[in-house]
Image 1 (cartoon, rainbow, N blue to C red):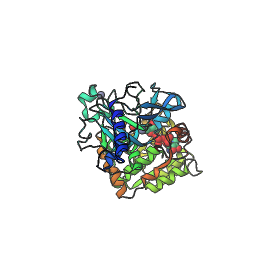
Image 2 (spheres, rainbow, N blue to C red):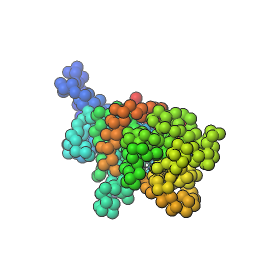
Image 3 (cartoon, rainbow, N blue to C red):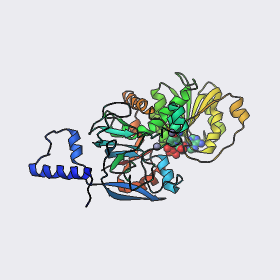
Image 4 (cartoon, rainbow, N blue to C red):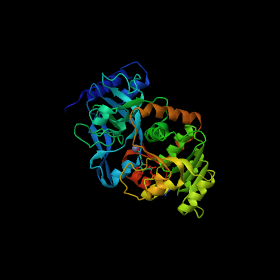
Length: 409
Ligand SMILES: NC(=O)c1ccc[n+]([C@@H]2O[C@H](COP(=O)([O-])OP(=O)(O)OC[C@H]3O[C@@H](n4cnc5c(N)ncnc54)[C@H](O)[C@@H]3O)[C@@H](O)[C@H]2O)c1
Ligand SMILES: [Zn+2]
Ligand SMILES: [Zn+2]
């Protein structure tokens, strides 16, 4: 049997520990506790074909000098995971999904001294990963402030499984961080739920930056949120933390709207209720709560083309819109550009993912939300073990909860 150095170290530790009746090292640090427990194999939940995630087991890989081995604690299920699970639209099957993950470092390559923010890093630290940019495309070379738009953007959790790198997604017991451009941050002062929500929060923190570039979001601004799924609700929390007090939230689910209210929405509109079941009625309500003019700014978070076409009607003349609801191709819509955009002089921005540089800001947002008692942890409504991730996908599709997560046992 061929053993790599990680496996050999694990066995030596175990033998010494049994001989001494105690751990080989006298240090009682959390770090050594984590190290001691590295097993010889790791499990991954791999999407092998649409609708079929299978748990597989592999020997623990060799950890190179620039690599990190993380014991996974949990990972959010993203709409993108569900989209891939349904039909492999990205053509990356077989793939171990899960990019909203977090865990504890159990092994560090000798060259890894700091995280991406330059903070010291050690075994025992809690970690999250961010995007992997290529460093070589036009964007990476010429527009380093926009690496979220890297033409070869990668992320742990959307990489095709390979012999060389099986532990490359967070739906696993261990994640092996490797490869050029990997970015990661130490987040010891956030709890598990906050860490599992960090990635979706980064999407929204980036969208706040995009919205802010229009100069239309300020104290006193009325901001409309269309769609109260995990993205819309997190956007709401980000806006609240940023000082926006007048938020109007629209959705068709009473449960999600209740959550919007808890997070601080002033006005909620249920488009299935008799008072709001037409676009005219909804526009009427929005005008009523905005002195007859409409919202200063709107975030589109539904992924539904018909909703995206409607959103212009809620926005005042001279107002703004951030389109962040189409991370995947859900089709087209048509509008009358005279009424919707030109005559209103709407300031439109798109928002795509986030860069690693959005992570420190996102970590600050999560701490601030906690201080402000914005109950974002309540967004986590369901958790599933590794062998039940097909069920987790079904629950997500049925919109039975808000944020569905994999939590390691
Ligand atoms: N920009 C990015 O970087 C980025 C990143 C991740 C996800 N997304 C996108 O964000 C979107 C939302 O993600 P999610 O996980 O919250 O999805 P979700 O499907 O859970 O939530 C969408 C919500 O929109 C509501 N909705 C549908 N029609 C509506 C209408 N006419 N008016 C108001 N609300 C309506 C639904 O009831 C639902 O609650 C997705 O389509 C995804 O592609 C974007
Ligand atoms: Zn995601
Ligand atoms: Zn690039």
